[in-house]
Length: 323
Image (cartoon, rainbow, N blue to C red; front, side):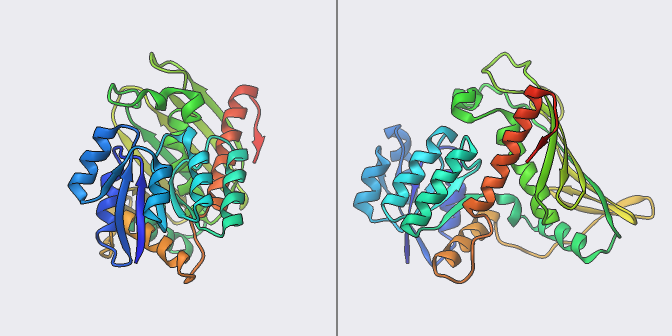
């Protein structure tokens, strides 16, 4: 039985703790948060011990696994502390603020021989997996392009201020939600993004991060991809369109998958699948036990940070960037 602790008792904590409860190999034992009331509230609901200092928790609980759900600027130090404690970790995305921080985290995990997994949940949705299967079977011919569109009011009052600080979050909607888009494209295609050209806007009345982005990317296989995101007020959209020589796929992660059929879309039936948070923890447990290597490893997540850095540099310079 692997003893699991959670660092950070924010919005995502319930998804992780509910997933742990469904996995026989894992046992949640404690949660830490600098806000004492929040730590105690989560601990009481799930029968855990509560801490306000995660380092003390790591020491006293002798944890095997730590789930790190902290603001982005705290990821690197938390990873170094977990590695030093000999604790495997699942780190929420984005992995870190910079590629240089990613390198430090990867090196620390390797030195202490612990697993470093990044929470890239796009890999675990049934509709995403089916889209990838159809793509690689070649049912619709040759892939021509991919378009990912996401609109969501990013500057809602309920969003914590740190999300809107470049120094603490690394960026705005492109860092936070764009990381999912970059990952989804790379994972679906099994092909890394190698060049980006981007234009961002900064029209929000809160913080100093971007509120929208239009990105043109090319993968190492030569497939063009566009990422268009807006965090301003409007209609929520989250769609990925894959265009082939013989048809199209419309992927709405969290909702379903549709395939073109005689000029219209029909929904693709999906097999029953476990919750994405359960599946990612199963992958981590397998890696810890030596059954298979991590798919969402620190080394892979580093490539997403490389693309994000390229996007911001492209906006600042007005030039295409090679990743």
